[in-house]
Image: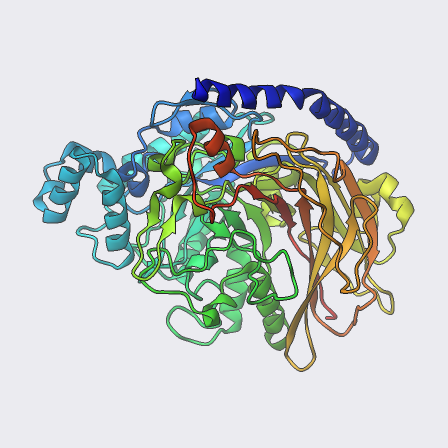
Length: 622
């Protein structure tokens, strides 16, 4: 009876929100049409939401953790169809995605089915015998952790780039993407994850092709077995483009688990950066995955002590397998904001910015289910799908510290401004960095930079934005003696929390080589006033912990503003990006408490503040 009552509370609470949701949707539709009602032009007028980082049962670790569903289910789920998860739970997305990249690990493609079946060749190795036995005993989670640690430490028992094993699997990956790609309705990109690990330090990249099967089938994915050096990956991508005439890019992710290696200031081989390296990194890696299940990667409170929102779901205990503990000295070379600042330093001294990247979010889910919705969070892996006990599962067993499943995030999504829902249009938008990442919200964010925006331009946002300036991901020309102006507008997710505030984050390089940052509150909801410390007070918290509802009476449906940087120095390199905060809403842990009667420890958060991060706009005096 108790279980039924809990579900009834959730259902009734959902029903009570229906009228409010309809009002919000109507308001958003009206504002959206007002802002975007311009003449038909070549402007990218459509925002598309997707996941550039999903794993299926083809990935060794996903299979070991219990994933038993594959690419068909992954695509169907992303397109809004109901599927059955590996643990037998029926599920579907409330709102389908517009695009998906199945990015299974290139190393060991096709290996797990052989391990599970007791393949004769694999069983010649004692470690595979051990893992096969453990799988039969239902210890898949332990197998996955052991597998990851051996792979990350370079002690894996066989080579993971066997051509005979990879070729048919890669063919099936390409064919599945072709099968589910439906131009104008749903985009299925061809891609994979290059899983570079150096003693447990994460240097992973997701590789995404603009091309179709005729080109992508001509070259197998690059592997960590081939090399763990990103420069070698770039050489491989360059060879692909030269041989096929195709186009490809790579997206690094989880610098927070690299222990200072993701944005370090020397090459993997220990050499100083030269101009060739700087240009190659800028060319092949135009985007960075700023948020996902394994921690948010925008900023860290140690690096940004004056930013009260820099402590969002940070993972800062160690590297990927927790074989090495984290130190504060590593943090500067792990987070997006500090990396963007380091890039300005190289632009000033060497003329090229290697860390001139745009931003996206994605899930890194290993369940075949691309969901970043807290109310429908299926966890990092199939052993952490919804259950009463999953919150206390050990996600990583470390030497000095452990990471538990409750610390994982229901994050995130990639948002792209493009002309149409096709591979070419969305990929081109990624390449030019007209993208943003969210922690799971479908908020719509527009951001433009120029020299002559006025308040009246907000009424013709898109036309004025492009004709008088540049969008997110762009470069501002020199405005002579003028101060730069920025135009920003955000519409809330009709299924999410309303908007708390819009902030602009500025970073710049001083003449003496020092690097600075400042966060500006540009516009916010309600009638709050800036306090004596220059801060906008909290928006409040309306989450009801008894039924996981919240009240959108605080916050705003839309926020928009034109902002001028009065602190601007035209002699200094700078970047600007937007961070949008929603009001607090229920975290996935609260939904688990209500659905399963889970009793969690006090350290587990029950609410969270969803956010979005746009690609920067850069200014250079040269």
